[in-house]
Length: 335
Image (cartoon, rainbow, N blue to C red; front, side, top):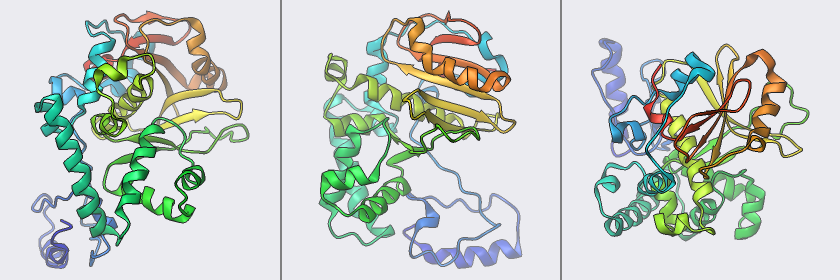
């Protein structure tokens, strides 16, 4: 739609004359309301739907209803999987773009490179007049290294020697064209020991791995980025599901000033909470649940369940309302 913004006013007139829904489908590769050439936002006349790259459930043709299942079943949710750590790493490295999914590894890299180049040179320019596009490419490389970590614009500005206000504007642009997503910090109302800094995630992990320069073999090495990439992978699977699951919930992350962390917090509209930790290993012990136990002690009855999703194959109980689940549960579970 960003290619023909002049259509908005005629569409507005037509919708005012005939308000039946579903007669117009307007598509674009950027958030339409961010377009500087938009003559009218059609308030009250338009519903905006974000179209993500494929989820794992869409790729595998499986239920993809983990969030509904988790709130409905709580600790009763179980699943055993045949997948192993290398399978999850390969899925994350492929990502969810249809064209990337069908290509070989070598051809997939060419797709990602072309996608980034086109997005920066065309879509970003249509939203904001930026002349120094090499800065955006350098910023993307730095953000890839920081994926699944706290996003602090001042630190990034210092490393790139770019003014903080410019970095803040660039980050907003990258989120507008669906390259990155920020996960806000959860406080649950008691904010005196919570850190309010958002967490950074890339919308597509295939694109993230391309920017990191790490394929499945390198990711799996001891010095590879498997932990970071798999956490990003899980966060985005959850974010996708929130757009279609029946349970109205919001995705957050949690971190205290004492550095107690929970990778993902799902809070339902009625205040019920599910905590999720991501582990790249195939074995766990009780210490891995420290963050979830902290959240459970704080929330008491509001705490539905705490899950560690990991690369192991079995569902395992770890105490009151705490359980380990294979990562595959995210797209195999149904209520």
